[in-house]
Length: 300
Image 1 (spheres, rainbow, N blue to C red):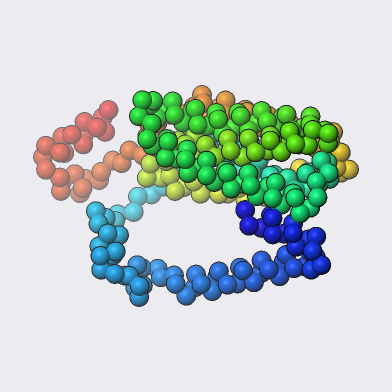
Image 2 (tube, rainbow, N blue to C red):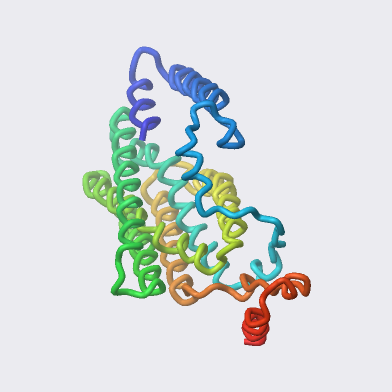
């Protein structure tokens, strides 16, 4: 939201491209310095921390004595997790494409000025953030639908709608450049609903192991940073609409297919690998009645 319009203006100014790098290098250094100065690993060590704020942070928090082993094999062989990761791959590939190559597409294919392309990418990204916040609140506040139904609806809005308009983008010539901007706007707004889709499914199904599932999504994000440039490099050699159409259709099909698979496997029930079987020592420490309940739960 900041980089795109600022970079566009600086590129067409007398300072040129180098000023974009100098500005962002200076800002990065300033932000890192501020983080290094204020950050503390423990909130109790921070000089600005008050007793009231510290009490609120520690409220209802228990000490973790036993660290549970992450069931990597069970997670990696769970079909719901793969449905989540496939949806994430499509969404992250699309997101990286817009951030990295939408300005190039708007300039080289549709004929917009460099200064304008920055704003045309930044404004939809800002709306994307707004829709993400709104959809997250709506997903929690809507009570007349089951969690499973909400996840399917939100994921469909995020992936199928954006996938459809990605396919449309591939057939819009320079004469219909304004329609391409509208399509780009719809894509960014619709993908804002994703936080109520596969992200929520990952946390509900993986529960205490959701950190591992979400870390794989971050790995997929890193993977998309390598795949996306290679894809555009191999296909869009002459920056023609026909070449870009192939890229748009690839992303559109990937998004729609990912959503279909997700909707088939999506559930709000915790996976079997989230069930914790207490050790013999832990069982002996429990009251007799609770021991019986624990045994019954394991047998089920």
